[in-house]
Every structure is written in C-alpha cells, then in structure tokens.
Image (cartoon, rainbow, N blue to C red):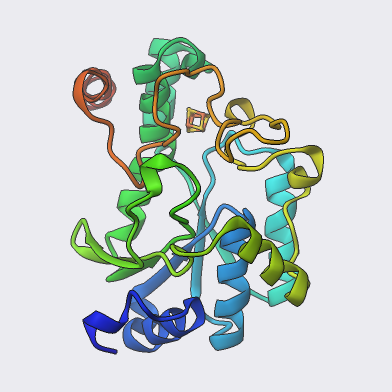
Length: 247
Ligand code: SF4
C-alpha cells in the first residue's frame, strides 16, 4: 500500500496490510473498550496469532479481568498483560500514598506514567508497529489523529480514526462482539477503577475519566504528552521516584 492510500483505507484493509507487512513486529494494545474489541475482532479474522497486549496497571476493575477471559474464550487470543515496575510503584506509594491521583493533576500524571506510560514504552521497544483504538471524535485532544503516523520511532496505526461511536456500535451489533460489562452500568470510557465513573446521557464520552479534574486534558500521557507547568512538575516528581530507586 502506498503511503498516500493509508488515510483512505478502511479499518480492515489497514489492519490486513499492517499484519502482512510487520508480522511478529506488530502489536495490538487494547483495554477491552468497544474500539479495542472491534479491532480485536477484525484482527482475529485476519490472523488469530496476532500479538495482543494490555496494560495491567494494578488498579483495573474486576470487569476488565473478566473481559480478558472472554477474549481468550471467544477468539482464542492469548492477551499478554504488561505490568508496571514493582519498585517504581512501591517508591511512588511510599512518597505519595496509594490514591495520590485525587490530590493534583501532576500526581495523577505521575501515577499514569508509572503504571501505564513507562511499562508501555518498555513493551513497545521490541515492535516496529503498534495498533490502537483512537477515534477523532472521542474528544478534542484526539481530533487530529491520523490513521498512520510515526511515533517514538515506530508506526502507530489508528484504524478507527475516522469512525463515529455509532459506527463502532453498528459493527459490534452486526458481529456480536463481546462488550465490556461496565457499559451496561452507564460507563462510556473505561480505565482504572478509582479514576473512572459512569456518565449521564449527553455528557462527553471521556467525562467519566478523572472526573474531578476540571481543566486538564482527559488523557493519561500514552497518546498525548502533558505540556507546560504540569509537564515540568511531572518531570520533577518522576525524577524523585527514579532517584530513590537508584539510591
Ligand atoms: Fe493511576 Fe488513575 Fe492513571 Fe490508573 S488512571 S494509572 S490509577 S492515575
């Protein structure tokens, strides 16, 4: 496929191309939300042996672990769990407590760095291409997502970038794709248990993520890096943990 075609390709075409082009050097990451399940369903039809992993932050809701079991049973895909460095988690909790994220945005970002971003970076070091479930209309910060882009030295693919929430639901209904149980409880976006809640009808899709933060982006740092003051404070907080670990 020529580079110019990638933005026009359908989700299935793009996935098929990526699986063929990169083989074992391609990884799909999922948190078992609707978009991730659509991608898993498509990928399982193309190549059931495709490499799939999920970030197990240690703070996931029980329902997410049930989804891991569901995926194994339905698709026969072995989902690899990627965990944070226990020493970094211990250091963070020793300095700031287990529920640091409720106190201020940089502390929440620190927790996301240690439990999500750093484990992801370690995991992706072995791959040339990475597939994610981002959609442009999920929120403002995702409006410019491209289907294929270079990110941190590898190709990042968002096959559903131009899909709407309704298209995702149509695919799920048409293909009887398993759904995360928390959607039935009013959740629209699902992450760690202490940082996610159900939302009311009409609220933004990601309004239930870090709902106590009124001015921050609803992002964990995996797809979009923090900027400005929050980034500088996060750097300081992270250095403290890493230095304490080295001491
Ligand atoms: Fe920590 Fe919450 Fe981020 Fe999960 S979502 S890593 S618990 S701050």
